[in-house]
Structure formats: structure tokens, C-alpha cells
Length: 494
Image 1 (tube, rainbow, N blue to C red):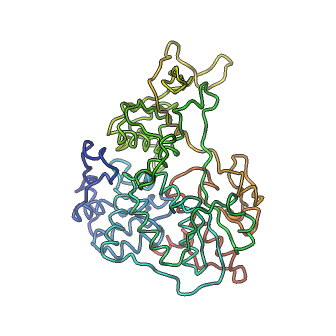
Image 2 (image 1 turned 90 degrees about the vertical axis):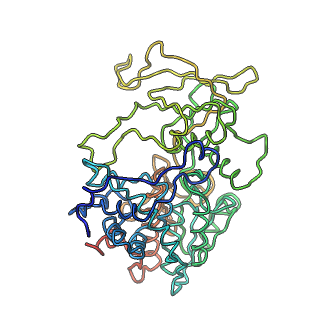
Image 3 (image 1 turned 60 degrees about the vertical axis):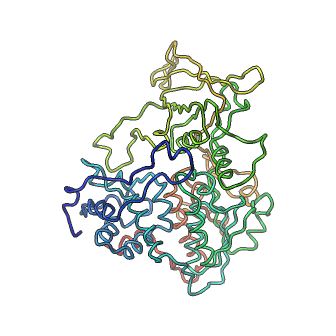
């Protein structure tokens, strides 16, 4: 590093946000441009640690001190090359990743960590501005054909890597537009879709073929796919939502899964016309979001933009602490996180159990009955949640959004037709020695279908590592792969 005392000179600083009053009127990005001088200052805060724990915190093993040093020197081309050596899509992670690398930052022990996520975004956006990001088709083709099922972050990463290795890649997407979770699960105010389309145009120019409205196991026979291709990567995500069907009143009109709500909102923003009878709109309603994670926060931001009368987010777990305990570092801490959506207007409550969904005289949802709970010992002497006496109340609610996570990929259809084994959690099983290969030799799996619902950055990592396994499988006669592992990439700068 040019300046090893940068962390003593500069505090953590982020780009200014548009005012709440302005941004709730649209779905555009929240942040204003960040001057180059400020970006360089933030990179200068990197301490050039002897042991960069940020490497381990990042599922991709990004070369963080190295690209920080390049930014400090204003060498944007080098910074771009270092960043993209491990990360196919920094324009995504730079916007929507919860940044586990920052939680592992050594500076974060007693100061605010380096703004690594923001630096990723600044590097890739300047790379686009300077013309460094151009299609790079492979110089040779292996003749091997690979099908990638799913065009979310895991599928796109696997497709990009396998294409660069020279294989002929076709991506199958069941929706009418490519992008998966990035397209329909992330609101535009966090990831505008021109960012996704810009990357998809590059992947297409590099030779990847996209087949849309192609639902494997439904309108395309899964076994025909196995016959036609030399290898298949399953990257369809974890799509079966966790239900609250043990709660009385479940199924009342007005109760929706979060992903159905967000998908419909994104479609509306994209210009799709929706049937009035099936439209989910928060305008003028009391909205309750069950689930305290990022998806729940995305529902909060969307409901505010639709003009909800009130928005309340409830969580069954206790309120997290405001700061992490020192002995947690460098692991991921359970701390209170307030998103930009919460800033826009939201009541947040913790230790809340949903007891019943209550209908109005017409059978529509009008309220939910809740109780406060605490961790303790029940009447049977077992540890668990205990209701607090006389804490019952009704929350007005005409629109309930369930953001309680996903339990597994859907088994019926594609997995069933292919005869793919699943584990006790319902995720696709793989071998201990071949962690991305299923019980069907030609079929591999990556992302949430394999590890369960997780982060976008983990999905990209899974796609890259799975692609290496597929490449090794297709080149079994050579027993080698043209794709580097995370460890090999890290070794480039060691």
C-alpha cells in the first residue's frame, strides 16, 4: 500500500442517499454518485494486513487488499482485472451482497471496516465507463455441449466459466426473461434491471445461448435433456417457501408469499400487464411482513413505494444486539441491521408469535392475532419459546407478506424425472469426493439447490466451483481443468 496510515486519516464514508421523500416515488437506485477522490480515500483505509481475513470472509476469495491497492493508485484497469479474476459479476455483489468480507475485515475489530462492497461497485462501474468490459469469446471450442438449468447467479456463473473453458453452453430459464432471482427476486431500487441486461448482453456476445420459457420437467422432458447434452448443471434455486400452515386462518385472501409479491412488482415495473383479479398491491392497506431478513426488508421498501397505509415487520426471534461481541470476529455477527427500506417507514417488532389470521365478514384478511414470547422452559420442562401472559393483541392487516425463507428445491418435475437423489433437507445430494456431482454422472448441481437458500455471493461461488467440476468431467482423458480454483487464484498474489 502507498499509504499504510490511511485508516488513521480517513473514516468510513459511503455515497449520499437520495432523500426518503424522493426515492419512495420511484424504483431507481438509492445512492448518488461517489467522487473518485472519495473512492480512493476509502481504498486507502485498507491496512494491508499480514493475514487478510477478508479473503476468508468472502465466499469467492476476492483479492481485496490487491484491488484496494490498485484503486489507491487509480489504476482502474488493474483493479478490474484483479476483481474479475475471482468474481464474474461484481456489479451484482457490489449492490446486493451483505458483505461478509467486511465483517471479517481486521480494521473492523475497533473501527468501521473498509467499504469493500462499495469499492467493488466503483471498480466495475468505472471499468464499464472506460471500456474495459467487452465480450471475450473463447479462442477455441471443445465441442462438448453443456446445459445449465436456471439463469440466476449460480447458473450464470457456471455458464460464464464453462463458456470460457470452450464448451458450448445453453442456459434454460423457465421464465420469460433471464436472470432468475436477480430479475424477479431483487427490487429495482436495489438492482436496476439495466445492470443485469448489460451483463446478459455480454454473455450472449461471448457465445452463451439462452432459451426462455423452458421449464425443464414441465414443457421440456428432463430425460431428453440428459440424452442431448454431455453435461448438465442444475441451478434452479431453492423455490419451495416455508409455510405457516399450522396457524389458524392460513390461506385467507390477502396472505401471500414474499417472492410472489416481489416478482409481481418487478414485472409491473418492467411493463408487464397483470390481471386485475390477481394483482397484489399494498396501496392504502395495512401491511404486515413476517420475517426479519433481507427479503422481508425488500417487501417493506416495495410496500412503501406502492403507498401502504402502514407497514409492520415482525420477527419471532429476539431483537439482535446493536453491536457484535468482540469474540465474534472474524465470523458473521448477529447484530441489528437497519436497511434503507426501514428508513423509509416501518414499525419493527421482535419476539412475536403469529397466533391466528382473522377474516372480515367477507372472508378477507383484516388482522392478525399475535402474542409476545420469550425463550424459557415450558410446562413440560423443555427449552423453547414461551408465551408471555396477557400479551395477546390484534394487528390491523389487509395484506400479509410471508418472508420466512425457503425449505428446498421443488422435487416434482425435473428432479423426479431425472431420478436425482435428495438429502434429508430436500436439497440435491452430492458425493463427498465429488461435491457438485449428483447420483447421475452427467448431472451436476450448484447454488441453493445444493446448499440451501443462501447469499448471492455464495451462489456465484457455487457456480464457479461447479463449473470446474464439470470441466474436469468433460476432460477426463486429460485429468485436468482449464478453470482455476479459489486457492490457485489466491496464490497468484501470495
